[in-house]
Length: 286
Ligand SMILES: C[S@@+](CC[C@H](N)C(=O)[O-])C[C@H]1O[C@@H](n2cnc3c(N)ncnc32)[C@H](O)[C@@H]1O
Image (cartoon, rainbow, N blue to C red; front, side):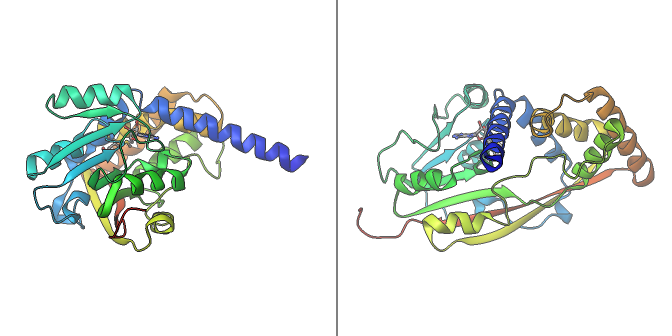
């Protein structure tokens, strides 16, 4: 009985977090706040190739990006490579609107990675970049990605490491200070990471190649870092089950960021990510 109750509570907590994550992407505002810190990337301290450079593009590929968001990777692909065709798909109407506004020539469609609106073997390359951590049923999603790839076609997946970033440490310290409670965990953990992702993809695709990508940022003012933190508010409140005094959290985080900037001239943080490449086995369709 107690166990059943626990399972129900876990399920309802997962559903609340899932809803908060979907609400977080109702428009592209939160994604834009996270993308904004890339203006402060320090190339000389970064390592690893961007995920889309892992594919030896031949110029004829039919490409699908699932969870394309506001289309930043679709635009990078279209501007840097000749391709047969490129289509983006996303669950969020707000994201699709932003992708269309940024590039009216880019085809994007609404849909769910768990039920892709394409026939079997429609694509040579399928990409799922920083999106599988929003999905509860990884096997179902990966089976769909496998289905729409032609035999011999490539899957490209990217995600972040589970390791805490310096920016997360500032946010957690601010949350502890404002709430007066040092919780063991404030931030929801990703369910699909650089660490566990290869095993999950491998269950459907077999062999998986992995490359780590490390990006370092030197941020000269608190605002871009506070923007990233604000983009995480909804999922944090859903995860910890309380509404937070966010202006107070921001003020505490700002003080910490200002101290770091006064000492070093910048606030340094990093994102450790990884991409995985896998293939649908060559051969006849089943
Ligand atoms: C963190 S954003 C990443 C966007 C883009 N791939 C990038 O790297 O900039 C995750 C995206 O996945 C989308 N998404 C979440 N769950 C989805 C699902 N089940 N099917 C399709 N898209 C989904 C969200 O709406 C959001 O646009």
